[in-house]
Length: 150
Image 1 (cartoon, rainbow, N blue to C red):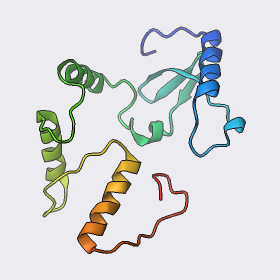
Image 2 (cartoon, rainbow, N blue to C red; image 1 turned 180 degrees about the horizontal axis):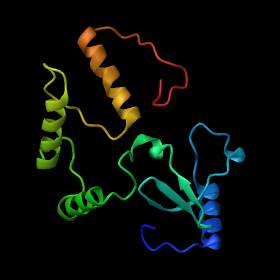
Image 3 (tube, rainbow, N blue to C red; image 1 turned 30 degrees about the vertical axis):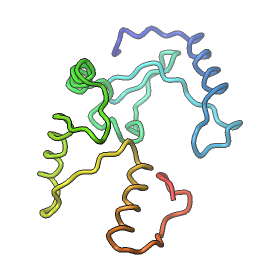
């Protein structure tokens, strides 16, 4: 396993109890959920605290498509965190500029800029703002209870 994981059911219960005491889970009846405490992950697999192995079909909300703890991703995160962990949107940064340039190169012709956000809800909120500015219209259609807000 990834970090020489050793099964520890008592720790799994502690993690579960902490979660239930202090964490709200989205789109769930809070009293009815029983989240599975995950202790470790490697590639396409997850392990619970009992040592049971699971194939991660969800890719953790589709953000670990190349697998958990991919060595190149871990190294890139470590290198960047040792240099600069965060930068406000009003500042320029080499890695943000390089990432934007690579995305623009993959985008359809005529698309030359990237707007980075922290997550899906932020992306939707800003897309709505941009659409309203561009079209000068204010009504929007959305799905009720859609994943990234409505």
